[in-house]
Length: 148
Image (cartoon, rainbow, N blue to C red; front, side, top):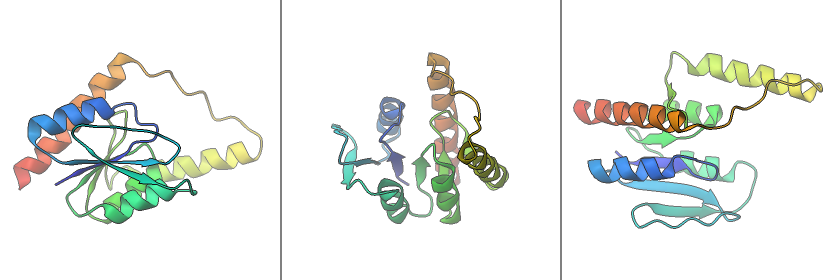
């Protein structure tokens, strides 16, 4: 098991590394070359700035049993298709029971925005979001570890 992170805009990189160190799980963080990221623990993979380049590199590198941290529903769906696990930056664990409705919601929101509509405002991240993420992240890692 490894942890792969869509790290460009990921607000929980520190939590991921903290928990991964405790559990001795390798971490690979994917960023595009417009970002700079350094880590004493994680492997950093820098990808050129193409449309979805980081997402595609992450998916291509993921293997069955890996954990992918992403806020992109499409990346999560592809991850699940590879029999890997996916969790959002907010602690939502993606699975076969919720991914279809999330993709449908994303599609509808894109249609509304393309037609000039608005789909709501993003809420500012709070410290509680970090706590929720860490609890869910530990839960999914423990579930995988227990099944090995």
